[in-house]
Image (tube, rainbow, N blue to C red):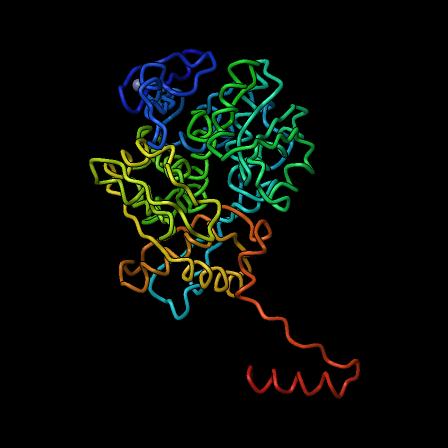
Length: 421
Ligand SMILES: [Zn+2]
């Protein structure tokens, strides 16, 4: 196990063996300050040269794929996965989702088709599988949103216990899914950050495995699998751009790392341009990529899943963006809502606002002529719109009822037909 992978700190470069529980780099963690992105996030490194030697070069990707990417994951056995379909989500080609577009290719990666309806299942499943292989039966996380629901659902399928800490002020509607999966939910009188810190202390004290994103290095490992799938679904081609909804930077880093590993294995020759899309009201990651001192603006956006004051995976994701010349764009809440309506109405995919933000990013690029003719563009849709029905209420209008006779209905239908010949 130790030989298969090890961890490397993205800040100080220190290396640690892969055979025991570790979260942030022990050398960097003590210097971390409240209100600043943490240093010491660990990157999981495999023996890429050895993997290249296992299979003939022209068979390498197919072989890794046949093994469900196991050679590039920190677990030993496929049977450790939950008995649910994790990832393996559809990639739909739909060029006309941008009206009048005949110029470039658009692919929608619909990760709302995961078991708990979000991308987070990729991370939860791997964290859960690792815990199973290492004899840990209780997992803990702080989350009111998709990560909490995801961990609760995956643990239910794996017969593991989950403890989810949530701020006591979180609305019941957001917690319903977590509770339906039978998680032990514990409201905390405090903020999300208080809940996060408490979950870290509890995992230390009780030996629970902590799934917190950008704290547990394996969350990135689960998320990178989306890049392998995209490469496969595009029939072994690297797309030109991937639009990624971005909050704390973990999904962004996961997408980068997946494509980086294909490059390190000699399977591909380049990375796609990865476009970090943030809500204009919560753009603390991309606003700080080129600045010396990290400055926070308080977040205000309807895109709840990417509303983040301090992006916990800032240093790793900013490093990837610089190394691979990443691009970025911010989109307003109005653009997000319009994108959501357009995506639902022209592709049949009802995405949550954070996911619609990625599509809004593509629309923004298209409007400003930044998408080359003939290019392949992937939009990562990370969660279902059913998760957050309240945010789109301003976009819908329920007509007045008709009397239950065909004459009244006929009048309404004729008006409809005259407007939609
Ligand atoms: Zn370090």
